[in-house]
Length: 500
Image (cartoon, rainbow, N blue to C red; front, side, top):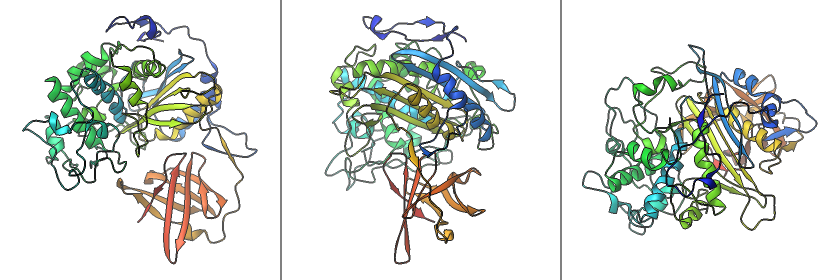
C-alpha cells in the first residue's frame, strides 16, 4: 500500500498550527472489518432466520459500481485504507487509495469547519445578517420572508436559511470558462441551469437542505478573506491537516488528472468528459481521498472530547457544531444522530458519477457507555454507489460492536391479494424530477428507485406497510379515493411522497 498523508496522533501535534506527517500503511494486517467486507454485508432489515449475506465485490459487480475507496479508524487507530475496483471502467485502470474522487456534498461540512475558524477569529458573526458580508456585486434579496428574521451564517450552516436550490447538476467539461459563484447565485444562463438563489421561506422556521445556502456562505468567505475559495481552503485547512492531494480547484488542473477518478453512470459507463465541473465549490466541489478526509474527521472527534485541534478553533464553536440546530437534524455542517450509547456526526455526498458517505462514532456526553473513537469514509465513483454505502457502514458497526442501526429482524407476511393498488409512481418536493416507482413482477412487489433499472423486493409487514432490506419503508393510506404515501429511509425523518 502506498504512502499517504496521515495524522495518526493529533495530540502530539497540537502545539503547532501546521504540520505534515508522512506515514506508511504498508504491512497493515487483514482485520475483522476487511474480512466482513468479503462476506458479511447486510441491509437495514434482515429476514428472521435468513443467514445469506453479500460481499462488497459481488455487490459492486451486481450494481456496476467500478470503484470503492475506504478509510476506517477504530479506537483512534487506522485499521483500513484500501481501494477496490477501477478508477475508470473503460481503461480498467485500478483505483488506489491515493486517487481523488469527488466528495460532492461532503464538501459542505469541510467548508463549514473553515468558516468556524473565521468565526473563532471574530471575522464572521454566526448570528449577524449574512448581507453584512456581501458587496454590491451580489446581495441576498430581502422579501416578506426576511422581515421577521434575517438569514445568518448559522442558519445557512444548518440548512435553516429558507433558501431554495437543493443541489447542483454540475457543468460539462466542454464548457471552457466556468461560471463564477456570483453567476451561480444569479442563476445566469445558459450554463447555470438552477434557479437564482433566494429566500423562499421564513429563515429558521423549517429545515430545507440547500446547496444554494452553502454557496452564499462560500461568497461570504471569499469576501471576508479577500482570496479565492480554493486557495484559502488549501492554506487554512488542507495544509494544517497534511492533505497533500485534496483540492477545491474547479476546474481540476491538468496536473491532477492522472490521479483523478472518472465518474460513472448507472450502467457503469464513464461520463462524457470523465466527470462534471462544479463552480459551487463549497457545496459540491471538493476532490479528495478517504484517507485524507478522515484526518479531519479524526481531529473533530478529538475536539468533541475536548482535545485541541490544529485549526485553532475555540471549543465553544466545536460544541455548537455538535449541537442540533432545531428544527434541523443538522448541527453546524454535520447531520447528527444520538442514542444513549452512540453519537454520530457525518454527511453524504452525491454528484453525477460519484456517491460517498462519511460518519464518525463517539460516546454521548454524560453517557456511561463504552468510549467510542471510530470513523469511516466510503467513496465511490458511481451513480449506484448508494447500494454499498450503508452496507459498508453496517459491516463496520457489526464487527466492532457499535450500537448503531443494529439489524431489524422482520417476518414478512403474504402480500395482499390486490397488489395492483400499491403500484404508484412518486417523487418528493425537494427533487421533483427524480421519479420512483412501485412495480409488480411475478406476483411480487418491487421498489424501482430513481428508475435506474435496479429493483429491490418490497416485503409486506401488514397494515399497508412495506419495506426493502436496504431500509426503505413505505406506508400507504387512503382517504376516500385519495392515496397518501409516506416514505422513510432507515431512521431518517419521514417524507410525504408526491404521487405522479
